[in-house]
Amino acid sequence: AAAAAARTGDLRSYVARRRRRKDKMSEPVDPRPALEEKCKPSCLKYLKEYEACAERVQAKGEGHCTGQQFDYLHCLDKCVAPKIFKEIK
Image (cartoon, rainbow, N blue to C red; front, side):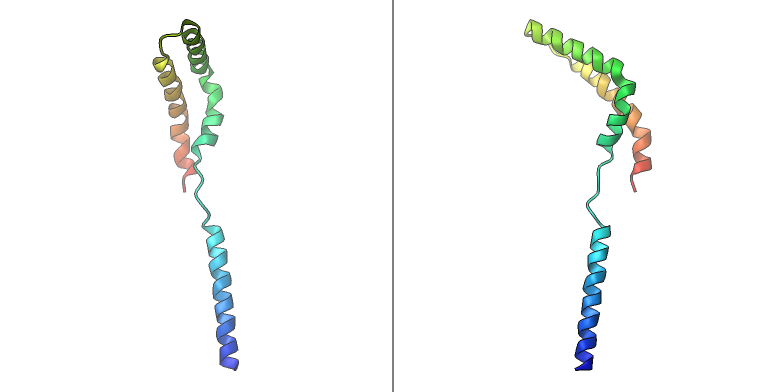
């Protein structure tokens, strides 16, 4: 009976250890959205150009703002890239 109780205790401690380990191994979090939010103020010029273009296109009913969109996204990427590798573990 003592051996069975010891095995039961071992099993309980094993299960408890596994649960703690699983808690530590939570789902990874993508740092990019938070870094983009921090970088947005440095890219306001490009965002304003894109928004102005979007208003013009909407008013005219034709055209596109692909160039302005790429400029804005390039600015964000340029700001985020050096910081993202510091965040990744």
